[in-house]
Length: 324
Image 1: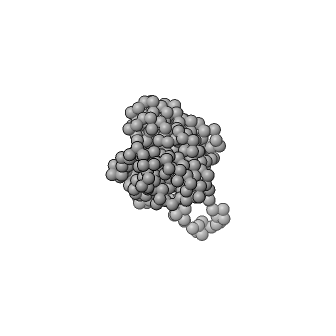
Image 2: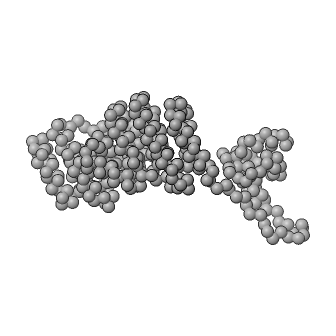
């Protein structure tokens, strides 16, 4: 480390030799790469804030230190690609140096690393979380565009997280050219999903509720008008999910009915469950009058419990009022 200021090339040659010997001690490489001390990514995610980045800005480096840092990072990326089966160095590099990976994404070893991340579902998810939490150059449009290029090709199973990141983090930028790139990337990803089998959407972490949330975010932030194509594609895939989601079947009717009515056992739990399936969610098609009639047979507490559910069909309220 004492040679960094006087002979950075020799230090890089030493780094390459150590990597050839598979020396990947985290403590040693943290000093060479000037890894900033940050809270764990999981803690950053749970806090839901990027405030900690303000107090963990990377220190100013001399020219020699910057040369060694960037050169060593490129060498370490090459080492990670050659040892792709070992997830620990890859995870450490992505979590702690995501900004450096973006800045050096024009280097071939770094491009190979990004491609390796795209091939792996878990690594793609980690990369997206690191970008969301620790990317600290949103004020630099050139680096933002490089980041978007590095996100193109993320594993298909992480499409839900990718769309959320693109819409909530990058579409809101005030640089129109960057916003168009983000919108184009999001549209291409949705088109890829539409080309796939609809029953595979669940593996992409996309749900009807998540798509509704994204559409609401775009509308509330005045992004819908500027991104009409994306809104249309989101509506199409949401419609596909709605069509393919199996309707909740009502509780099975008893088949062994007693011949004597005196022997009939009144199962209130079954009846309440049946009313819920008719009045809430994607239950069986029942007329509003039938639903109101069934609700009227219940106690006030049971009616209140059903009608205050989030998935209660509010179109039934008018019939319920007229029924009274």
